[in-house]
Amino acid sequence: MTAAIPLRVLRGAVTDFDTDEGLVAGLRRGDARAELAAWNRFSARVDATLRRLLGPGHDPQAREDLLQEVFIRFFARVATLRVPAAVGGFLTGITIHVVHGELARRRRRSWLRLTSTGSTPEVATPPPCTEAREAVLRYYQKLEVLSPKDRSIFVARTIEGLTLAEVASVHGLSVSTAQRRLLRATKKVSLLVRRDPVLSGFADAGRAEGRGA
Image 1 (tube, rainbow, N blue to C red):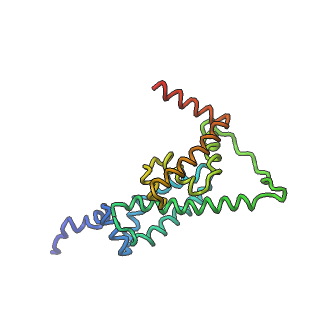
Image 2 (cartoon, one colour):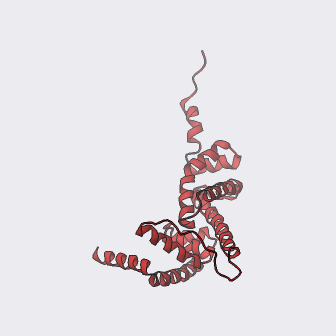
Image 3 (cartoon, rainbow, N blue to C red):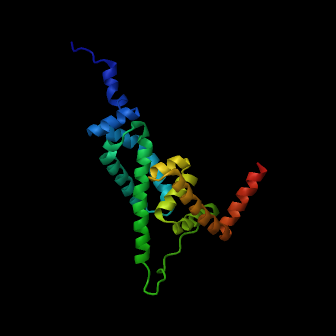
């Protein structure tokens, strides 16, 4: 009769990667199970971050490619992670750097699409959308005035909800520099929002609701 396998051994394949320490150790060994565990644990979170940083209207297939790129970089660089408990922030930092590159490429492509007169070519009229969706689209259009890094700082703080210290860390900046760039970006976006007839109405409604709370 074959000896019974201890329950802790049977559970090992699952529980080894439940902790940050176990997951990072497995990734450093190049364990394919650890890579799968990391994907299962973080891919939805990374995809949500990509959607918020890139804004609406971004090609879903292109976003899927960026998601793959984030994890390729993550697996290649995880050996440099000194504190396993910081794995989430480490991955967020990689995500932000990937988005920086994509926003820069998108900006260059927009310049290449200019006609000889300097105006943008005619594009198809987008399908009708709800008032709220239109506001979101217009809001993200305002963010185009920001540099890729300032935009991701702004989105990370105001939409992702990261603390200022976290924003500084994932962008490789001091807290004071991150705060200065965030303030500059906020002033630019706020001015554009106030000048937009649709967005200014949403902002006024939000302030009125806040006063009534």
